[in-house]
Length: 415
Image (tube, rainbow, N blue to C red; front, top):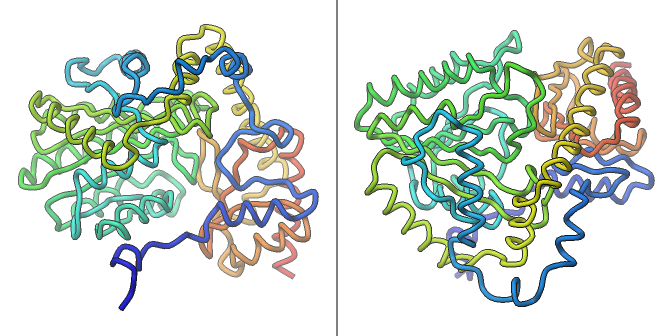
């Protein structure tokens, strides 16, 4: 007889990026390009004001419990932010956000409130592995995967449609994660419009199926190309004209305000159904109460002051520009060293990452270890074929050499 429940037996600690990042950290002088954080000279890239904010806080402000759904003021400010960034949506349909312990808890809430065993989850073929841990190992959802890019390396709307229409289950969660982790791709305005149109037609043709459309906006705002900047909610909001569609937005302080360890996320619902919106908020609060009980007051107090500060807006713009500058240098280095002659570089235009599809004769895990031990660069091998590199944590002067040495390492496998 086992001590473990069925979940306890099935849950695992994935041998993913956290493990590989730890392996990188113990290699002397290795450059770490594994993990989703922005750094400057190997230290977290902060908003400078955060240190002043922390010093000014009093125990009377941060020691008491927070309300279960979070501090009212920060929730109101975050709703104002969403409305400003998505000017076409109906403000009456948008719920007041609730505070979560990071976006990961938001995903867990959505999964547990709206799906169960033998429901369906639609994802691209390359995705953040925690989705699978939460939706499939914990809840028993069936994953359907579409190829994010076609053979010409274009966003694969045709396979998205094909995969969606082949789902037989009557409840489908669709995660739209743009900028995408791991590829760093955000669809063009036209691509996003077509993607949403596909969902809309499917919803109308299948009124018996309930669709939960989830925007994982962890990397929101880090859009680097002009025609690839449309917020997901500014497209998906139209879907609530269908009674069988519920739109959920997940986002947070984590990446948007350079506060990774604060673990302040938000979950916000968009629906034309007033009664449904009321019930969903009540049940979300109930779920929060039964898990974390209440979010960190200290983290919220810090985040609240960041949101209220005009100086922080300037600091955020500066930090965002640093990340974009690294993106530009990366694009130049890839072109200079003709890296795409040796590997397939998946399209990227936003966020923290880009992804390389390795040649068939090279195992990505073996390549990672050689690149780490012989060349002193830590990258993330996601599977046998793909390498993810976080340019967000590479000082700009390190980027050209990484690309040059990546190409040299590739050549060693071709000897």
